[in-house]
Length: 178
Length: 298
Image (tube, helix red, strand yellow):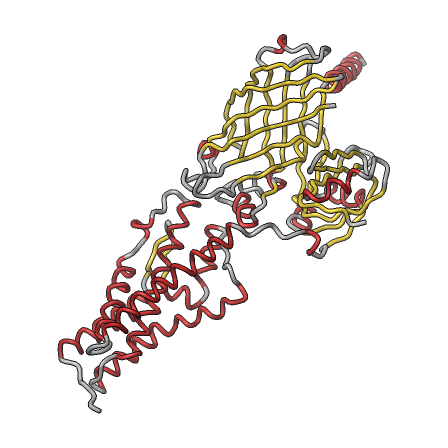
């Protein structure tokens, strides 16, 4: 009985912690691996799931690889192909990290806060630690955040020759959390 | 009018070059990593099968693939030249020039195409990919064209330069058209499936692998109640959720944002878009089925 009560209490506590996180299902990731020789390797995914827990500073996002929309048809096909992102086998990008200095952000006071986020980025089931500067804007209780960083594609097993496809893709994650 | 017979030397060279083209046609011209590709592969249509299987590069004009059979003329004309020179004691003339020109044009395509593969596999470099049979075919083609007539230098140069220039121009044009080819407007595409949002979500929740195999990469029209809507400037997303929180979400084409703004959560809409399949969200604890290039289809 005691065990059941404990488990139930643990579940409630977990749910309470989970509920504290601000979330969205329509964050945007901009991906740019274009080069002067090939300017079309750019895409956006506007259906990214993101979360930020103001109490713990934990930051997360998940994106369906296949939902990156390119303007160019061939590049969209290639992006999802086996030798690049292989989206059929690895359908998701994900990141889980933490604001390094959460005390710098007063989530109850309007303002723009510059922070550093460190965490694990997983692409094609390869996980690498990254640190990126991020900007958090509090306005009327709403939290908006933008983080810009580069992803070295070959490190994640993504073919990039550096001529037509940049080896260091520029990635920008923007979210308005509710 | 007199017909000049070729000298023994020219005759031997013509036969040698024609045989060189004939033989090299069936040998690998290029090696894409571990995939040998011969000139015959273009004539049989296997060239684009290999490029699609190994690099995801399909034929740019699949409806015209039958025309690649014209490259069978390379071995056929080479054989004609050998017989013509040996039996009729004549110059290879137009037969030889055409065989050489066709082989040269194909060699240019193979070299340019292989050079592009570096984008998919940095280990593939053009100098390393070209095989001895490629060089033999190029040398034999130029040689055969030069031996095709006793004089007619202008024609000889034309048969050498024209196929190289035309193949280069055609390849560049196709490459340019592919780089500028936009994703097809969803408005112009017919939905492969028309489904209710909750029923669609249920299919993915029940067996996501089967649902992904069925809907992914398909144009689907989904009808349902808006649970969430985000629209600003030229971007818009819209969700339809079931009672468990699993949802389908649409990223709209730019010109749709203004139309999407006119709706609100609770409204019933029909949306057509390209299904990207589902992922399970650790953050939300639900199935997420996403669509891109979506348009309102009310």
